[in-house]
Image (tube, rainbow, N blue to C red; front, side, top):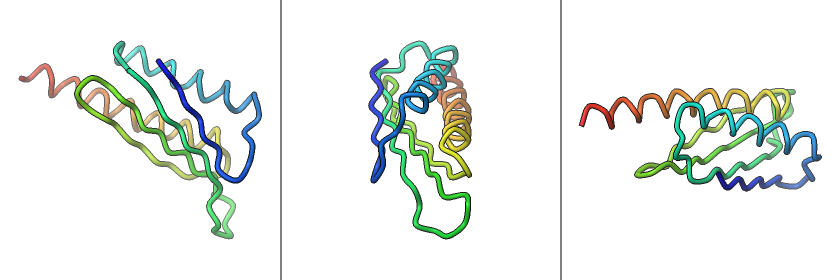
Length: 99
């Protein structure tokens, strides 16, 4: 799977990038044919503490899945987004089996 990570207005450290790649790799357990993933990390301008935003676009054959989550840390928002994508993958696979 090809993974692109964009960090807007800051530089993501190696540890964060590895964490994201590791989490995305786990999605392969649910869908072996994931083509690519595009991750955008940004800090929301809001004053609250939960201002770390992770957006993940996942390309699977015949569909593009997307999740956007906001949390206190990029790790947390990435976890939530990956979890949302896992549910979308399962729903997509169920639809494919029904046809």
